[in-house]
Figure (cartoon, rainbow, N blue to C red):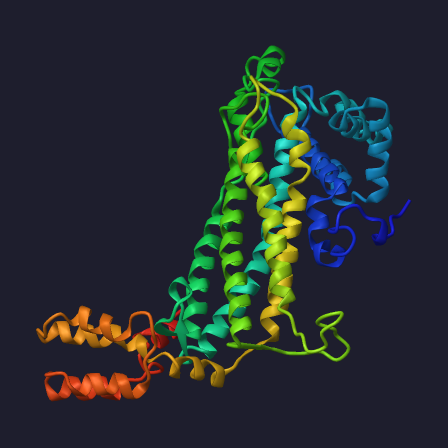
Length: 455
C-alpha cells in the first residue's frame, strides 16, 4: 500500500519528501536489504575463490554474473519478498539468507553452493558491511555534492562582495570594519576544512564471526588463513579492514563520520544565524516572488524563512548525529541489540542535513547586498576609527593613546567632525596625521578585500 505524503509520520517522507528523495537509494529499508544481499553474494564468491575451500568451486563468469544480478537488479518486489520471509523468521538478516537460497535452489550450477550462503557468518558480519556501504554511497553521491554546492555558492558571493565594506559587530556592538565578502570567506574556509574531514573519515568493516575470533570458521577449515581472507574481502568492497572486534564492528567509524557531519552542520548553523541577522539589519535584501506571502497578517513581511528552516533542520540532524556518536560505540559485553534500531535512523539525520542544505542554497540564491544600507551604518560609526588612531599614536610615542580614545568614544558614538577634530590636534608626523584624516569607516578594512578574493 502506497503512503500519501500527507499521511507520513516523518516530514522527510511528507513535507520534505522531494528534498530528501536523493537519500532513499542509500538509506531506505529496501536499500539496506539490497546491500545485505550484495555482501552475502560477494562473500559466497570470495569463498569460491579460496583454494583451501574445495567444497565451493570457483564460480565461472556466467555464474558470477547470475549471482551478482541478485543485488544489481534488486527491486522493490525483491525487497517485499525478503520482508515476507522475515514475517516468518522474525530475523531480518536470516530472511536475506533464505531469499538468496530460494533464488539459487533451482539452479543446477549454483544449487550445490547453497549451504555456503552466509557461511560462518553472524548477522553483524553482514550488517556492518551493509551500513558501511550505505554510508559511503550517501556521503559520496548525495551529501558531498550538496555540501560542495553550498561552498561554491558562498565562495562566489565572497568574491563578488570582496571589497564591499561592512561594519563588524563584536558582542553585537560596533567594531572594526570588515567586508561582506571577507565574512563569507571565513565560512568558506571553515566549511572546506570540515568537508575534508567528513570526506576523509574512513569506513571500516569486519567479517570475523560471532565474537570476532573466527571460531566457526576455524572449526570447519583449520587450514584457511581466515584473517587474510577476511581482509581481502572487506578491502574488495572498498572499505578499510577492522581486525579487532566483538560480535559487532565497534561503530567508532560511524561515530567519527557523524561527528564530522555534525561539526560541519554547526558551521552552517552559525552562518544561518549571522545571515538572518544581516537580513534583519538590512545588509541583505531578499528577492520576492509573485504570489508568495511573508505573513498571514502583515503584508509587508519578507521573512528569512529559508535560513530559519535550515537552522531548524540542522538542529534536528545534530541531535541525532550526536546521539549516534555517543551511543553506537557502546555495546554491552560482546553484543547487545541497541545499535540495531539506532542505525536505522542514520538516514533521518542525513535527511535533515540535506533538507537544510537545500533550504540554505535557496535562501542564498535570494540574497543581494544593499551597499547603501551598509554605507549608512558605517557612516554612523566613526568611533570604530578609535582603534586605528590609538594604534598610530602608540607607534609615535604619544602619551596614553588608549585612554585618550577611550575618553573620547567609549559608551557613545562620535561623528566625522569630532573624530577629525581630535586627529587634527594630535602632535603626529604630518604624513601619519594626513593618513588618519583621510581614513573613513568604509576605508578602514585592512586586508579584508584581499583575503576574500584569495579564498
